[in-house]
Length: 519
Image (cartoon, rainbow, N blue to C red; front, side):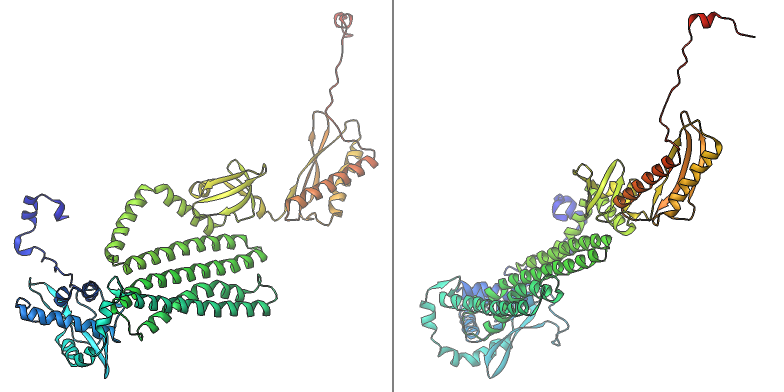
């Protein structure tokens, strides 16, 4: 923020005594950056630059600088001859290094040299030329390299220098390491294919077998991840260029994160598939909706974690990036309130369970079957077979009538019989209707009734009140038809006719209208 201010404002807010110390020119502020810079210098055979990463004394003296450059070359040969450095992701990226490794503060172990036993490669923290705290290869390690010099000089280094090189390492070394990686994956892929073949032979139904589903989902990415682990183990025991080893070990970490993300995503899909099938068999459609939502959320989280891990492998400052994402996320949330509202609405719909996937319902003016409840919207298939998408924020605030939640269906017709019958005949008709209802096994007996309601315009109206005890809508319509037909047959047999709208018109002639009344 201070850099964006005018110079005068910076002087007022930041006195010279409190200015931030300048960064090291060679990027030696952390153990990770020191090892990375050293490898880059060795890859370009710039031993004068590589010597800047050694705890050498008085590099301003030409003789001392030449000796330090020779020590840098000897360090490279020692590392090429069986030495190891920690992979990029394992190196601490804090300026203080690790404080819980059992070493004194300001000392960091970053690898080993081949010799009589393991000789540790140590970095030590000290004050640099510009007053900046920097990390360099310690004097103890340099002394150990001096003792290894006679053995190192016997190696055929001249042939190595004359060999065809790519990115600071011989092509043969690159091919050897890539061959190890490809061979590891091929071997594990063959093993995983054999395991799946044996399981297919032993399992009766692959789709219904939870064990086979999980193994089938896990083995391909797990084979890739184990190949990366195998490469890390084997590459350390092969005497090849440290430049090639460290470069591949750094970027093969990306493959490892991709394999882990792939493994987790396939595992989430497999578990969600098994859970959804179980929910559907148990008619727990809302549970299937929750599983689908959780599957999508888990995938988003896994992809975000893998992305952050890959950025860290490339050397980006993940801590600052996560903080920036937090601020950016807040700004995005303020600018995308509707999206946030829909996400909250989806949680409300799933938690409150007004409808489930497969329910026939009415939402506002939309009538249809719920096909999917997503993170942003809910899709409803209408009776006209069109698909209506309703944002969850709007969906959760609407009036929702769920027809699938009915425990019974109301049977409440009004039956009109013709005028011109006696009161006794009307009572007989009412009794006939009640008998039809009470005789049907799927009509609830409690509260069942048929009552003469009122004198209609063209009929004597009998109101029926009862419940059909089924859950399915189509079945309820079939039973309703059976009841109406039975009532019609019984009334017809008793001589009672169903009324229909009629009008009686009286025609009066002119003479009749002019004729005086009898009174």
